[in-house]
Image (cartoon, rainbow over all chains, first blue to last red; front, side):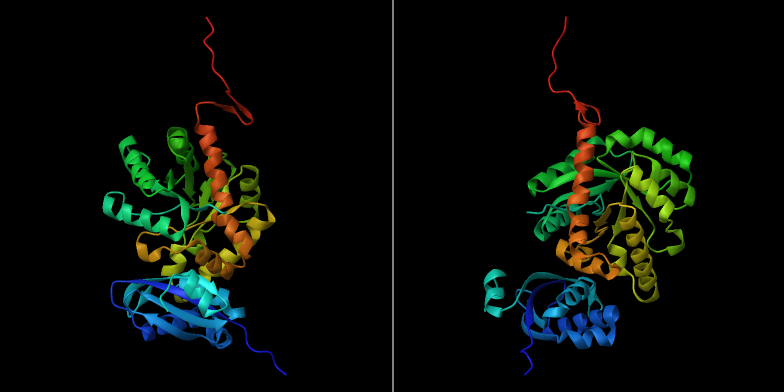
Length: 108
Length: 243
C-alpha cells in the first residue's frame, strides 16, 4: 500500500503595482520552476493554487514536501508578472492549512 | 535568534524616499543590519542622515564603500585614504592583479566580482588561499541572479558553484548580499538561502552567510575603529590623566 503524499502549504505575499490574479501567480511560479529546474523538476513539485486574495495580495500554494526548497527558490527568482515588475515573498511554510492561516495571519 | 544582515542594499542615495522605503522593506523582511554603499567622498551629514533613517526603522546601519580600482597601486591609495571612514570595505576586482592585491590586504573585507562578465571572475585557489590568510570574504550579490536569464544565468550559476566550492575548501567565508537597487529585487533571508542552494551551498552554510559571517565583519571593524582599540586583543580599558 502506498503512503499518502506529504504536502506543504506556502503563504505568498505578492508585491506588484497591478492587481493580482490567481492564474497570473501560478503562471509566474510555474514559469520560474521550469526555468530553474525544467519539466522534470516541475513534475515532482505537484504544484497547485489553493487560494488567492486579490485585495490583500496574498496567495496560498500547495506542493510536495520534497519540493519546498525548489518552489521557494523559484518563487524568489520571480521578478515580473504579466511583463510588469513584481516580487513574491514566502511568508510561511506549513504542513496544514489551518496552521498556515493561524501563523501567517491570513483570513480563512 | 539569528540576526540577518544585508551588507549591500543599493538605493539611490540622492533619493531619500527610496532610501527610506528600501530600509523599511529590509526591516519588514527580517534583516537587523543593512550596509549601504556610499561614495568614498560621502559627507558625514549623509552618513548621519542614513543612520537616522535606520534608527527610526529600528535597524542597524553600517556605512560601506566599494572600490573598483584599475591597478593595485590605486587600491592601496584608496585604502590608505578612506579605510578608517567606513565600517565595511569591498573591492570590485576587475583584473587579476587587483584581485591578488585585494585578497592579501587585511584592510579589505569583501571581494566582489562582476556578475555579468564571467571572464572577469578571478576567484581561484590562489586568491582563496590569500583571502583566507587575510580574513577577507567572498561576497555574492543576488540581484544579478534574479535579473539575468537564459545562458547568462546558467554561466553565472555554474561559476558561482565553482567559487563556493573553492571558498569552502580554503575556509574563506562567503557573504550573501542582495545588491538590490529597487524593492522588487529584495527578498527575505530564507528565500535567499533557498536560492543559493542552486549553487550547492547547503542551507545551514547559506544561513550563516546571511547572518553570522557578515555580522562578524561588522563587529570586528567596529572594534578596530573604536578609539579604545590598540591592536588585536589589546584595547584601552580605562584612561587616567598622569600629571
